[in-house]
Image (cartoon, rainbow, N blue to C red; front, side, top):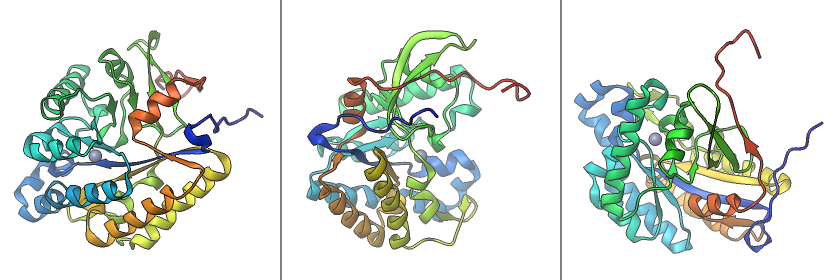
Length: 297
Ligand SMILES: [Zn+2]
């Protein structure tokens, strides 16, 4: 049996690296799913709650705990709410790339993927003063071309894949599947550590329902952290300000951050710090070839 490597030397002798991350989708996620939602003032207002209200509340909570987070901001959100990007940057958090229009790279040509990357980088750099080093695919739907496109543009890490418990080095392949000689760090995520499935109900967009209580959501997230404290791992929570910025959910997240901060075996950091740390270690290297023929494993 092959071993599953989940423990690495971490700052302070911690066993788990943890990060509270936020995807500031705003209207872009809804519009990417269905542009007709633009005609619904109510649906747009549901999404706008994130940049208008949620981000400010979350920044206050993070500041109170002294936690440095990563905010993935689509370029469209940044252009629409430039003060939000400036506020996040001024508070000392990392601003990372989340596409421009929040469209999934898998549905785009290579030229369109490049346009989304470059346009997003330009607006985030203009507003925050620095070019993003981290990327998260909209809907966590990374394309096979994207690792090389990101590596060529100097990105340090991606956080969209689900095949490990800890960060690893992702070797980028060329379009023909051959090695490119370039790589970036991958910080794995998973659907159970997202607030979308617990909280998101927007008629015409996503009607997963029933909406979960914060108690249920936090119990799920905490159970995964408990497992990682046993086995080792990197716990990356993904929250959306239009969902977890609501008062009851923000209060529950506030309490959870307090709990995690008090755990002596957990190192809390933003994703660029985690990527930098793991890139300095001897970590596993992945080089995944695209699946082209379903008849041959
Ligand atoms: Zn998103």
